[in-house]
Length: 379
Image (cartoon, rainbow, N blue to C red):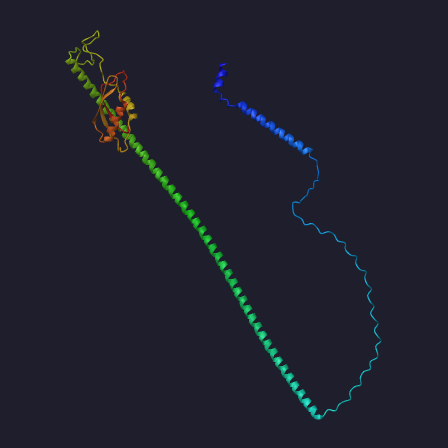
C-alpha cells in the first residue's frame, strides 16, 4: 500500500473534465455515423433517370481520319480513230535543164583575177595562220621550257632542302651521339674520381683511426702511468698523513690525560682516566688508535658518487679537505686545507661531502673524529 501511495504521488496529475470530453467525443462519432447512413440510403433510393455517357481521351491528341467516299467507276476506254489512207502519189517529171548562157571573155578575165586574188588571200591567210601556229608553237614550247625549268628548279630546291634536312638530322644525331659519349665519359670519369676519393677518404680515415687509436693508447698508457704514480703518491701521502694524525692524536690524548690526572703510562693509548684492568698502571690500553689502511677507500667509495665533475677541468688536480665528524659519523665541519688550484673542483668536493652527510664506520665500528682526505678527478 505504501508503494502504491508513493507511485500515486509521483504520477502526473489527471487532466480536468475528462468525462465531459469523453461524452462529447461519443456524441460527435454518433452524429457522423448517422450522416453517413442517411447519405448511403439517399444515393441508393434515387432512381436512375438518364443513361450515363463517358468519353475516352487518348494520352496524345490524334486527328480523326476523313470519312471514306465512294469513288466513281472509271469510264470505258473509247476506240482510237483510224488514220485515213494517203492518196496515191502522182509521178514527178524533172524540169528540163536551162539552156547554156554565153559568157563574154571580159567576164572570164575578171573571174580569173578574182580567183587569183582569192587564192592569194587564202594563201596569205594560210601563211599567216601557219605563222601564227608556229608562233603559238614556239610560245607553247617556250612556256613548256619555262615550266620545265621551274619544275627543275623546284626539284632542285626540294632536293637541296632534303639534303640540308638530312644533313641537319645527321649533324643533330652526330651531336647527340657526341654528347652522349661525352656524358658517358664524364660519368665514368666522375665514377673513377668518386672511387678515388672514396679510397682516399677511406685511407685517410684508416690513418686517422690508427692515429687516434695510437694516441688513445698512448693517452691511456700515460693516464695509467699518471694514475699509478698518483695512487702511489696518494697512498704515500695518506700513509704519512695517517701516521701524522695518529701521532697527533696520541699526543693530544696524552696531554689530555695528563691534564685530567690520568694514571696511564706515557706510552698508553687508552682514553680512560685510569686503567680498569687487573694490570692497571702498567699502560697497555686499547684507546682511539689510527684508522685502518682500507678506511680511506671506504670514504672515497661513499663520497665519489656524489661528485659532480665540472666541465672546465684540466689535468688531475688534488684538493685536500679536513673533515670533522661526530661519533655516529655525521660530518660536522668541512674545510679545504690544500686547494687544487681549480676552485670548481674544490667546490665540487665540498658539495659532495655535504651531500654525503655522514662518514662510514671503520672495521672496528668507530668513526675517526678528524680526518684529512685528498681527492683527484682521475683517481
